[in-house]
Length: 177
Image (cartoon, rainbow, N blue to C red; front, side):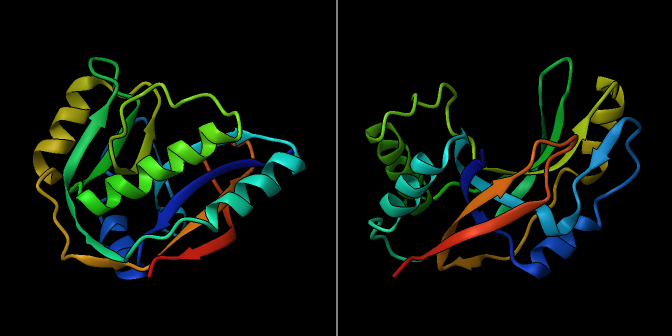
């Protein structure tokens, strides 16, 4: 049973810049740069019938390409931080693509995503990292920015259940006109 999600791949040069931020945070399990991505819609563990239906429906998305840039670092989890992420400057085009993915997944009977969409690239998952250490890390590296990069496709990823995420496999890609 594949575990699926849709997303945007991170260009190699942006991934390399993000990779330079690795280290210096006790309790962090760093994501490898080749597994950096911007998730659009988590689909979950589905059977092959649903997986094929998802892949077919995604082919109906008819959106234009757009530009994105990363605009800083933050953590998720509040007082008990669980991840360090690079935030993505939201654009109308990105939010429209994500909303369309959400509508399509609900159309085939998947439950609505319960959380508000916050575009980000996960850099590290945290285990027993103190909020103080995370705050210190963010204070020294949090003003990270990238130049804009073009997004000309989105992909359907699969993953295996693992500690820390990945490896992620591109199952199908869909052009943005």
